[in-house]
Image 1: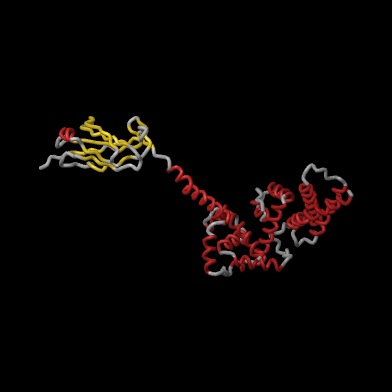
Image 2 (image 1 turned 30 degrees about the vertical axis):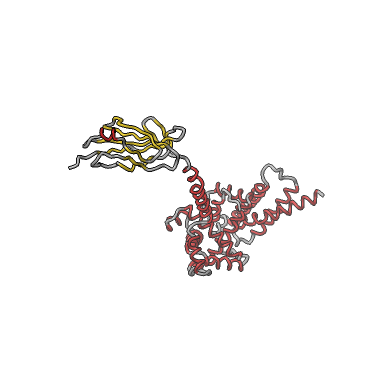
Length: 217
Length: 166
């Protein structure tokens, strides 16, 4: 049955709680609104029965006629009204759509990050070694390999100044002897790796890692 | 042909507005008032006469037209009684204690259905309808919002309808 905007006045009308003007307006309304009139008659009947039967109809214990399973189900069902359950179902369905459709859709888009002035799409590269202080001049630099067909460019810096750079398709590179000799004990160095696609687009980059070649005792 | 159509309309009006007029008159005069049924018949006759005399010109809805006739007749009756009794008749308490429930079997069914309701619904019906507390007072007593009180009352009514139909 359709809900009428005047329905909330039914109880107040029956209990004579409306002022004269509201009362007249509501009376005229129910002469024109079969929905309100029908509900008012039902309410009137209910109130009459409650008043005439007295307090006793509220004193008896509530008896669950259905089995225990049904009682358990009813307990949960009674937490909310059918209207609220319908709303909860709609929200749950929306949440499911977001989880199953929207999130995977956005996951396909690569993350974006910034390096200096450059805007880069892609993932970051994880450096493997050297990443901590070492005792000897390293001969090999290694990082985690990407699944894509990429070309890596490695940069080694001495006190912020570029010492050496090279490119490779592998996920490691062996330092030439000439460069190793330029690296001295007790000094701090840093290195980073960038990955480029076949078209030369920068698609991934590592963070700049610092390491120190300690003097051996 | 036109006469037949008019008769059908009057029958429809009688079927549709008869219960509304009865309700309004009984509420105003009380079911214990011996005159209430006569007043209802007078109003219905008056409505039919006015419609036949083309006094209803469609300036308002037919519902408002019948409401106006009903209200005027009730006011006239109360004035008339006031003159005879030297004072206006006592307003009847709600619900009228003399009012007999037409269908006793149905009343028993509803009373039984109320007993079957869950305590939270019976509690609201008890405070709201039996004790006659306002929505806000019931809400305060049960530590819920007035809106929730209305929801429970409406839901109880739906449950009762369902239980009575079973």
